[in-house]
Length: 118
Image 1 (cartoon, rainbow, N blue to C red):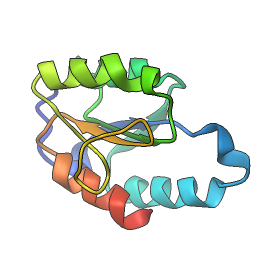
Image 2 (cartoon, rainbow, N blue to C red; image 1 turned 60 degrees about the horizontal axis):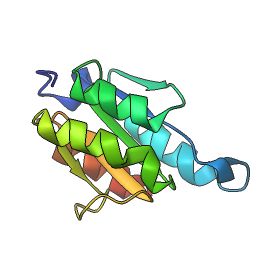
Image 3 (cartoon, rainbow, N blue to C red; image 1 turned 90 degrees about the horizontal axis):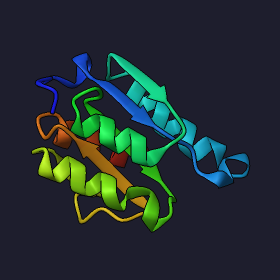
């Protein structure tokens, strides 16, 4: 996991669901809110890789909505086993419809920004 302790120094990653053409405003509102608070945001296109790279310390955090269960199953395990934190944006258990994963040090701050912008 990365040692980043402040959200304003964090490099985070996300993706966009397949319904982005009809729900773009919802996703861009969250991205805008996060962009205002972090060092940078990336989009790679693979939830599994995004989560693996959070676990490896390459990214400090990740969030995404409306995935398939197989997109996040292994990645959630990697993040958890590496010592990170995984939840939904409201702080409950993560699901394939709503996931926030971090190094654990910035989790509540990133989760709160994502939740407030939804």
